[in-house]
Amino acid sequence: MTTKLSAQALPAISTASIPAYDRSDLTPGIVHFGVGNFHRAHQAVYLDDLFATGADHDWALVGAGVRTTDEAMRQKLMAQDWLTTVVEQEADASSARITGAMIDYIRPGDSAAVIARLADPAIRIVSLTITEGGYYIDPASQKFDPNHPDIAFDAANMADPKTAFGLILAGLMRRRAAGIVPFTVMSCDNIPGNGHVTENAVVGLARLVDPDLAEWVNDNVAFPNGMVDRITPATSPREVALLAENFGIEDNWPVFCESFRQWVLEDNFPAGRPALEKVGVQFVEDVAPYEHMKIRILNGGHATIAYPAGLMDIHFVHEAMQHPLVSAFLAKVERDEIIPVVPPVPDTDLNDYFALCERRFANPKIGDTIRRLALDGSNRQPKFIIPSALDRVQRQQSVSGLSLVSALWCRYCYGETDSGAVIEPNDPSWDRLTAQAHLAKADPKAWLAMADIYGDLARHPTFTAAFTHALTTLWDIGTKATLERYLADKL
View 1: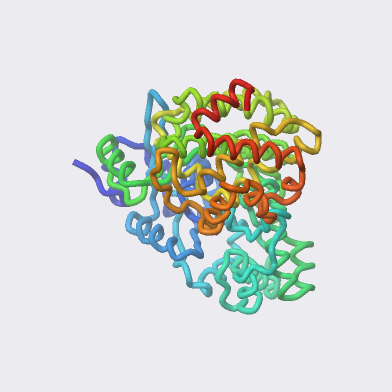
View 2 (view 1 turned 135 degrees about the horizontal axis):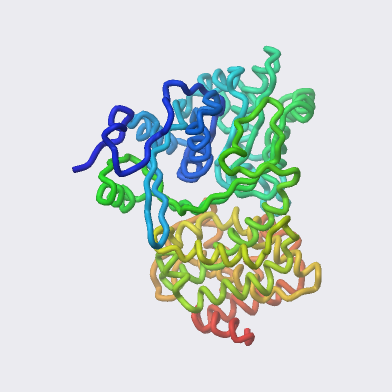
């Protein structure tokens, strides 16, 4: 027998911990754009922990979204009173908790309602998890693209903007006109300098609207940088069924994740913030070293295993880590090429951090998929892989491993595995990538011609030669044999 999740049903649930506070005491303090699995497994969990201490009940979450798919999440969460079941899984144990930090979710597309909420003085933080590709960044320059059609639309339609940045700016404009202190804008996405990137987007849009407004945003709005970490796969019918079977709970959209979590933040919140240091958030003056470590070692590691595993028809991440060639490839690329160009991190041994990442990737309970890791390479490669390769060629160091990672991505975007199985579209730019990958089979430099992705790296002869050799080898002898050559230092 199962219990359908709702506020009324909480007392009947004994298989999961429930909110240790009266949710009727909560009042909103944060509007969050992008209520996906990661947000519900990370920021919402930290707030749930904080509320359980009896502190800061005026910092509850209100959800917001700009994509048409966000409405499906809103409907599913509304049907269970905004509650979420979070299942933490390790190899030898699983536990479930129900979080209650969210108290409302504004209907996507209702710009007036979103702007009105953002103008409410009670809202002191606006946070975002809109994915690496949601910041309108030119991949090559890694700078805000003011010419994107979505941004141009919002600049001309600030009464009814469609992007998160348009809505944020409209809310700030409303507060400015009313003399209300601006909220802090906090990115929770895996982007180097995510606070700076967010600021560039909001100020860049403001500059298109009114240069004086841009100056005001630049001088008055805080955009703290932050590093976030928790492996959180997408929810499928598998997870819904596991929750019902193992915990007797019916949740419309549960979240399964690892037990590990980390959040490092710059303490730059002029309008105030919840006391998250009480529940494990680390506040520091400079987040950059932690960001570099996580993005290059962990996210770069994910990118390193995604494409060879995908080409060899491996489905789950833990299965990839069990494959001796994939796990050895990851270890060699990390230790030989990635870790040596990661700047030092306070009180952290980078090799120990990588060993932790290996254990996390190998967790058999998570059910994380190779396809998820391979998603959106056109936005992720320029952030996770290409910067390490550029650092190395500028130091005149070998890039045989990192060039092979790029070659594997190209081979994956060809659209079929080594066995001939079709790879379904897995990138917003899939058609373009597939076309370039087909050209690159005969002329590998055609792939590097995507200057918006490779930028200066494509002009380095060392990388160009290594990439060309790696891709040619992949087509000649296949993924397995290419990995064997690389691991034997014969590539």
